Image: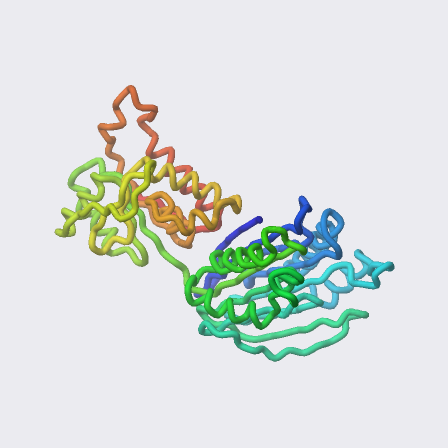
Length: 398
């Protein structure tokens, strides 16, 4: 199973387009016959899902060519007619089966919420508004010999759009389910999932997990889910380390108190500073125990309170896995401090680091494998990783 997630901000738009992706290879195949191309222009996000004929290497090549040709041309401003004509000339119809070279679903979301979709031989896209499947009007037209279904509508904040390959609706066919999962049943599942998760990555993961289960761990077809979630940006402020000068403690506490969105405090000394300046209590939270990650704390008004360098370093390793599409389900559902910190960072779009420069006396022990600049190194690596993931990052030092 391959997984991926990305949150894409649009220029001059109040929206962020969060995407989630899960693909299952047909059992016994090293390559997936489905391919997804995601790109963005200044005014829109473009997603192309293609399902290649057959499976394995040949299908992978066909779907990859289709999605990249279509996505790149649309990115450059080409019309759908030009895209379909180019793909048709590049990849001919199979003479033996008389079937199309590959199918495709194109979704383009503009900065004002307008959506354009073009579908060719893939299962119909699911549009969920206020948590419910909402029918969309469309028109059908022929481009050459290909009948393409086009849809235009305006999406709103909180809406989900889910595109799938036919491996999803066929899941369980001939085994757990005689006729497969089928589109209406998938739709009912999605209505529950989007209310419970409110995350593109989680919805895609849950749908992929169900398909894996229905196939009894041996998918009979390549199976792909792409989810798009339209929402406002999420802001996170993380305070780590005490300031070099004690007189800056109040400033650190004030900046954290005034910050919008979610708040995180890392480190015992930092937590004590925030609790003291806010005139509230710092408590130890032992509900979630881990043999390798220190326990959490609690401060009223702070979403997550953790230990310092051990937890941050562990969170960094989890984020590296997430950035590669690995271990997403485990990280996003685990309740140790490092996983919870990684999840908050991963799900945020705008991240402010408030970094204190005081040296921790514990790091001066020559028997510990910790350099004097360890905290700075970890924070630097963490900020670079978040920027590479498309997030807006600022660092304020004290």
